[in-house]
Amino acid sequence: RVAALLELGMGFHPDFTGRQNVFMAGQLLGMQVEEIQALMPEIEAFAEIGEAIEQPVRTYSSGMQMRLAFSVATARRPDILIVDEALSVGDAYFQHKSFERIRSFRKAGTTLLIVSHDRSAIQSICDSAILLEQGRMAMRGRPEEVMDYYNALLAEREGQTVRQEMLADGQVRTISGTGEAAILDVRMVDQRQRALEVVEVGQAVTLEVEVEVRQDIERLILGFMIKDRLGQPMYGINTHRLDKALTDLKAGERITYRFAFDMRLGKGHYSVALSLSRLDSHLDRNFEWRDYGLVFHVINNRQEDFVGCSWLGAETHISRSGEAALDPTSAESTP
Image 1 (cartoon, rainbow, N blue to C red):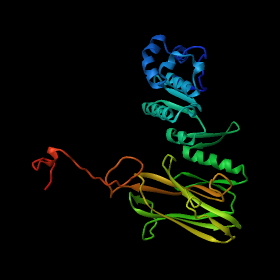
Image 2 (cartoon, rainbow, N blue to C red; image 1 turned 45 degrees about the vertical axis):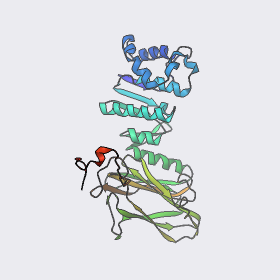
Image 3 (cartoon, rainbow, N blue to C red; image 1 turned 180 degrees about the horizontal axis):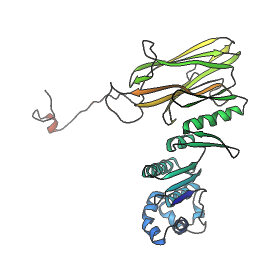
Image 4 (cartoon, rainbow, N blue to C red; image 1 turned 90 degrees about the vertical axis):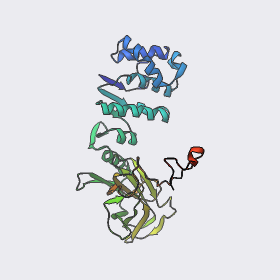
């Protein structure tokens, strides 16, 4: 079975009610009327458009049409689900709900083909990505690598050079920029200045970046972004936002940046992307953009076991009231 969301409201007739359109769209997807009737309560519940389902679709907002169309297309798990930008419409709540359903389909064996400019959607859902440029395949690979190359191609249109390097672990590093300044070295060290590839949760670390100025520069901003294994941003900052941008730099100068912090990320593999630019955005005429400047692994042998992508180190205080809490013979009381 193949289900597709290729165009907002495709197969919907504007003068028919939402309910009538559910039956028409369902039959276009190969469902029998009896099957649609059985699935109708689930479709209504997932779409959450209430009594509007009895109103003509021409009275719907684009978000309401998306809710109903997605609910019909995914009322039963397809073998293949094709989505073409459709999920960019609608409120954040329904987008989250839709992606959760898609993830559940993937776990159950559905093949997903998604066409989108949404970096986070592609990286969080897809295992492989293809970049198309003027109808031709420009790159195929891991989603985070393809999206980094996509950003580099945008930079190339501003006269910046783009090159790729193969790392020892097989990952592809994309480097782009105009070249007025360059990143020479990136390392993460502990308090004894020992280089780290494995970091403990809560450990004090310093990210050190060495930069060389190759042409006179009026203003220089260094930024970095820590990303998880799927390329999702975990934390990012730059010297502009820290009010530490450098000015009036001369060719030949070398600068060492140090960012000290406690590692509060959860267990897993992470990478650090870096940029040198004159403005706050790395996409606006950057001197250098490097997507895999550093790769490291976080383990947890020191802190309490926790779930999620970050460790907050919460302090816990518990107070109880009532007779049971004051009973010295209570099983939970301590001397």
